[in-house]
Length: 616
Image 1 (spheres, helix red, strand yellow):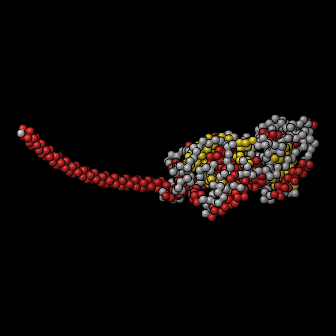
Image 2: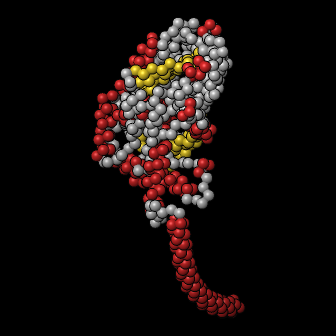
Image 3: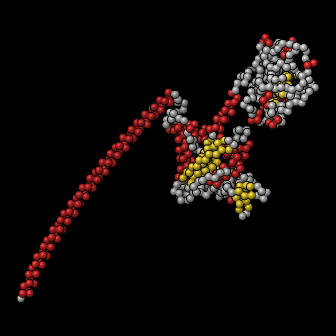
């Protein structure tokens, strides 16, 4: 196929001189041609021919709409079509050139009386391998497709513009919504195959159908690729991608980001640097008894794209004496978000488009810049997080470590992760458009970052975000100082949608599969089997609930009876004690009364004796 394309390009150059006639006006500056990629797709897959970009830039393509069907093109419309006449690609276009020129003066002396020509086609076969059709039409008020009754202008130069080399696929396929694809014309009926346009012009008859800008090949043999069915006209479903993009832009996007790291690692500062916005998180302290997950939701807009950003920060991580529970708290939070989405999916009437998806799409894990490798807490936490979220490790406060030590620290971290079989997130390299960029980003993991919200003015007057020290200045967005730019490029500008898809299609699916197995659902169960399984499972849950309820009732009744028995025993003991106290009180009162009576008697006797002595 490469040889055929090279020959087609060479032949188009040769054709410039073969079909060159005296020019009456200069060619229009905007030439449209099929690119190499479009020609290759046409020949290899049978796809519709796409128009390439202008050779002079978009600003010069002011008459681009003249190449669509039904629009006025008051001038000469030229078409060169190179078609394979033999070999495996017989009947397929190898190269095509189109051009719309300004109108020229009509030369009546070139036309015979009664002649009403619209288009003229020259056709040649080169080396028995290629058929070249050259069609040029003069249009006075309609599109150059055989619909005008104005005479043909002879003696006009046909400009041939070769495709631009190495045009990316994204640029080749970009075209306005109103541009119809250049589909091949419908087959010519058998009773009209012997009547060419030149014979119609010589006899003075008017063509009954419009002549296509893309001329018919010499051979009538039709090659069916068996893959794609070509349409005979513009249908309109080529705007489907634009509809999807418009719908997605109107709905907006959700991106959930988690930051995990010890207190004082600069998590909030880095987030503010990434999104260039102040985030009001409550300051962390070292007095929290457990890890707290603090959530902040921010609505952002950039270039007409709205993003609902949800930030989750771990406060108090690693500050407790018992650090084993720190990783479990975060893992439970991640699974809780998966469970919320799963419960919404399992509803009979689910409305996922209005459901607030809180599943975490990316997690920045902050590593302390000790230079001695990962801590035990880091390994335990990373192992738990890697199963549930896209983990991107970063070295916090990288400006506290020298460059050589930082390189050794990175290598040691990756070796420890590999030895512990912890699979952190790597940016995908299977897409050719970003494979080179993501490979570079993967080689920089873990990213050594520096965050700052302060700006300084450099000596050249440039205002940059940086951290100022007595020994110098560390610029946040300088790749010679840190990996902040690489992190932002990989995290926000290139792989946001990839991380969202992996969260839903890989991480969430793993959790969902495990939960379905726990609920005794097997693979391939759907329809009646699924309903029957759900009914059976519902009955099992009801029976289990009834059993648990009965057990709880029995336990409650037993505890109640035991409590009542204990209370009765205590009451009896208290009553006995009260009676004993009362009896002892009465006995003591009786004894006291007896003693008081005895004292009264003794007093009386004593007073009687004293009175007798006084009388004597």
